[in-house]
Image (cartoon, rainbow, N blue to C red; front, side):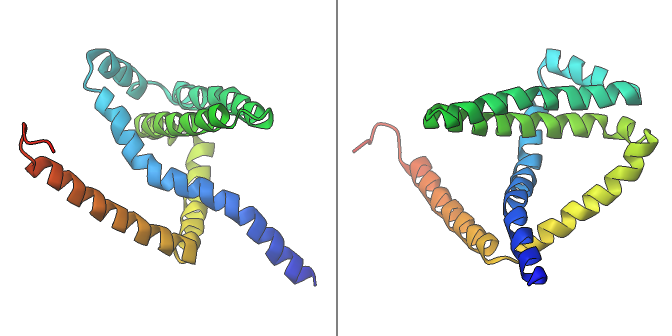
Length: 175
């Protein structure tokens, strides 16, 4: 009986955690690349150069503070959802999650070498990464993940065909 309850509890806790990790996994690299593209702008390039040269404790602040500042935005979104403003609340949650992931991903890329100079961070990061990778492996073998990947590939194929058809259509020959 206890084993059954543990499995049920694990399943309940696993679902939101898996969704969080999946979003981070799917979004981390592409969103970091979007933020990195901003680095081509002179002001952003200067800011990134400053961040790269930060000492470890300042790199921790540069990485942590912006991420923490998004918490009130997410709480506001939850408040709005609770008050029945579904569109605004959901839009704010999604926007904050995307912006937060993009910012965190890029800041981590810039600060990781300095953060790894902090002993406690260098000790904590590898186990965290190993745990996260184990969780992602579990998620990837699940049927919802496999179904989602199939849907993603089919959608991508349809979009590629659609975009290809648009490119082949000549200007001035609109139907």
